[in-house]
Length: 267
Image (cartoon, rainbow, N blue to C red; front, side):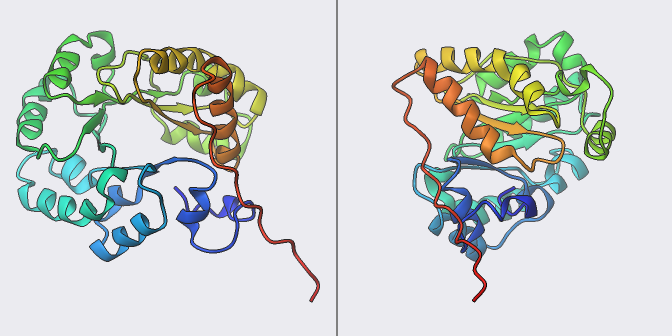
């Protein structure tokens, strides 16, 4: 996510991930979902970020969607070897499952979680609606393996029809997910999708501000990713969300102060 073209005018020149890390202290590792990077590439990610930065890499879709967590030992080995240079920056590995992966597949997920190395923490994102109407079995399974359940809250986005090309595109692609705010571990992860209009995005995240503040008071260490249909203003919105939580939890450290981009000159 750190290479989005719309963000580059806001960032100081140089390495894109290093510049992003001056704005926010966590990022979704979407690139690993589509292809396993080389160790050399992952080493550069580590070099561009501090040891407290959270880069949460997604398990490749070849494992989660194509093989559906079955017969993927070699692919998993290659992936884990590739991301090893991240060290503590990989605060969790993100297992995003397809919408067709339902409660009937829980035995498959259980087998997969059992063979995962204990060097990492794990978080699972499900999209099958039946998990949300009867969450008990999945919660029990994840808790047993000390894994988190990642909610993708799209309720605000889908509460009224789209009004722009970006919203219409997201309307066709994003899943209709309910709001779920139960943390299973000490490191909950949240995805939130707002709208083009900043006021609607901010109004919609207000319940999350209270939930996240509550988690922090309980001693948990949550990670929140703020999205909009085109994500153009996501870094600023993420910082605004952080400030709203910090107003309720004064001990929460501020995010880094971004280095401004170099001014454009005529010479």
